[in-house]
Image (cartoon, rainbow, N blue to C red; front, side, top):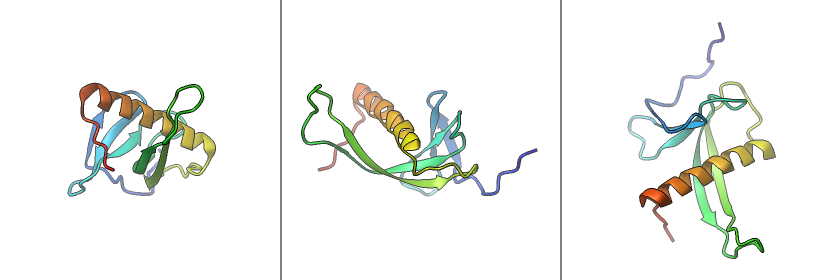
Length: 109
């Protein structure tokens, strides 16, 4: 049986899809994302700064820039890799799209 070496940093986890769930520790005023499957399963992280690029690409897409902090990495995955950054970037796009759809997106200037 595989034992986790670190305590989970979450008290509540709200499942939103098969890929990820929102997680929040008691007393924190921010939510984290917990990856629920695949290579990065069990990693909990939070986005720090998220910004849209000021100019769209030639394709019309508007890229997102973001920074993140790792809260828990139970399997010691490489969280600095381009693959991981792309993976959590795709999750960020899903979150932003959902928040736009529900009117919950807050933009701070």
